[in-house]
Image 1: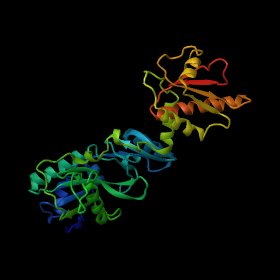
Image 2: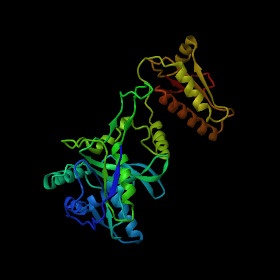
Image 3: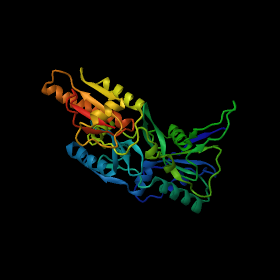
Image 4: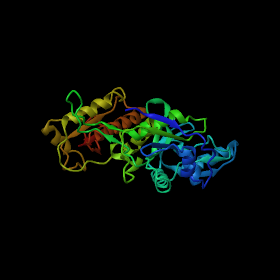
Amino acid sequence: MNLEIMPVPGIGHVSEGDDLAAMIVTAAPWLRDGDILVVTSKVVSKAEGRLVDVPADGPERLVARAEVLAAETARVVAARGATRIVQTHHGFVMAAAGIDASNVDKTRLVLLPVDPDASARALRAALRHRYGLDVPVIISDTMGRPWRNGLTDVALGVAGLDAIHDHRGEVDPYGNELELTQMAVVDELAGAGELVKGKCDQVPVAVVRGYPATPQADDGLGARALIRDSSMDLFSLGTAEARATGLAEAATLPNRTGATSPDPAAIDRAIATVGTTAAPGTVFTHVTDPAAHDQLAGTIPGWPVTANTLLLAAPPTPVDPFGLVRFGADVHRLRAALAAEGLPSTLLPPPPGTSATAALAL
């Protein structure tokens, strides 16, 4: 494969209502079928009127920008100081919802296109119907990456090209069947286009020539194919946000229901997890002897008849008010650790005549 990546200078200033297809063809009369057009989302947004007016500076500007960010945010993923990583209404996770204040008048902010896939489809259709050009279109924007410094361009909208090249089921030269490999080729092409567009050169369009892909008759699924489903997202929150969410959920842990016997190994793992952070002297006892379990259960008012396992929790001695607070936190950590193992529990009063201050039924 031999690729050419060519800038398209001469686009000039883009304003609301401008005809991007005409501007691109005028600036790149050499464009031909099979070329891949990589267009910066900012000029698409400008042409579509996705700009908002804000004060040029001062506290009022910060307030106005925060209001715009809130309107463009579906959920906050992480926040550190003034930085906000959010999920947009499109499903993209990015800093400040992609709101941009560069290459635009100081009294305006540029928002992402409402539907970048639709923008790509519209531009591709205009080039095909009015100029006879069959070219896939990528709408790109700059993003950071988790665990990596630096920025790169990625695809927000795509038309006429599969967003992902799925290698699953193929066999490598060593005879290994590929099981997970899915390449985000449109992100790679967007990054390639950025190499010749730059950030300060006012070159918002690039052409990639030579990529071996036959333009599709239809527009394909678009860039939405790149958005990971929430059920598959292992890192849906920032560290501090995930911790806060976990604590909030731990405050309303479900009580045990059903009669399935819990896995003793899972109970031991939960106890071991909490044991590393419990207050010195806090003791958790897993009652495994059936006779002892039945004897203790008979002394606890409201004992769930479906419970099969009993955990006793005893605080450090002697007990002081602060020690009881720490002990209460230890018991709740244990419930959270059990829940993480898939084991709901019910907090019960302690059996009379024992040193336990709390009992958990599982």
